[in-house]
Image 1 (cartoon, rainbow, N blue to C red):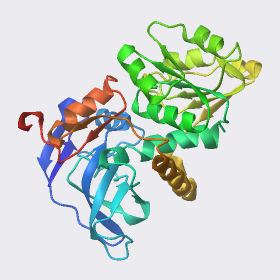
Image 2 (image 1 turned 90 degrees about the vertical axis):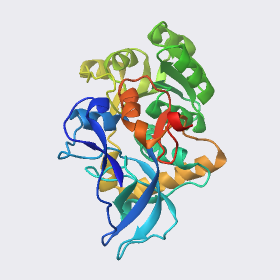
Image 3 (image 1 turned 30 degrees about the vertical axis):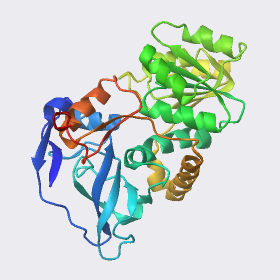
Amino acid sequence: MKAWRVHENGEPREVMRLEEVPDPVAVPGRLLLRVLAANINFPDALLCRGQYQVRPPLPFTPGVEICGEIVAVGEGARGAVGDRVLAQPPVPDGGFAELVAVDAATVRTAPEALDDAEAAALHIGYQTGWFGLHRRAHLQAGETLLVHAAAGGVGSAAVQLGKAAGATVIGVVGGERKAEVARQLGCDLVLDRRTDDIIAAVKEATGGRGADVVYDPVGGDAYAKSVKCVAFEGRIVVVGFASGTVPSPALNHALVKNYAILGLHWGLYNTKDPAAVQSCHEALTELAAKGAIKPLISERVPMAEAAAAVQRVADGITTGRVVVVPNVRTKEAR
């Protein structure tokens, strides 16, 4: 089969190579999946760069989130050939490949309401948003939610989940193209970090109160602005540092203004509370069936263009989700 492999750390477009590798097999307890769609996540770029918290042995195949079809069932594994499922292939044998073998206990049924690319983009981003907003911040209907990078993959999920929860959503983006995407996602107010005074605008929109919940996958300057416009008893949910800068919170400031700083590492729930992950999946499936959430897919790219697509995500120039769909033809063949 064909798979993208990383033999040395560096920028995705430079270190990802499309190669022929042996087909994986469905050993006991595992399912063999044909990859229908593989969502690109920012951690895929960090894996290529050697900057992720987990550094797999070289060479490895990135791709941490897929929608796939079961083609073989290992002894003792639960699943049926032909079923469409969501899976998180374990790196070093990730999902930017034609076939993957995964632990049967970790797969979940793909929502019928979503196509392959949409389903591939549901699990990690929306689970992160759901746990961040509901489990950590306890977002309530009528509250104001401030979402940084609102037009991106992680931010767009938080926008939709916030609206589904009955919150007023303020989205922060960079540039008019992304601002239009944020409006289409349902943001009640969209602010451009390049031209707008974020702090003043949030306070004006909330009658001086500030945002009840801040969802921050960016860090750096975004976090610095957030603490200046968070409400009394507000909650700042830290989910990542796409800016590349990890802020150093001033705890005396949190004390004086009476707000909470909440960290969220969604992956921990897979080991600490897997039942909660399944309950969340059921809640997301229900929301998808109602049309309340639907992953924004900006690009569906063929396998041959995966490295370039990962680089675009790494460079922060994409909106929504970029998904590798192996059966999509290359631009030259269209």
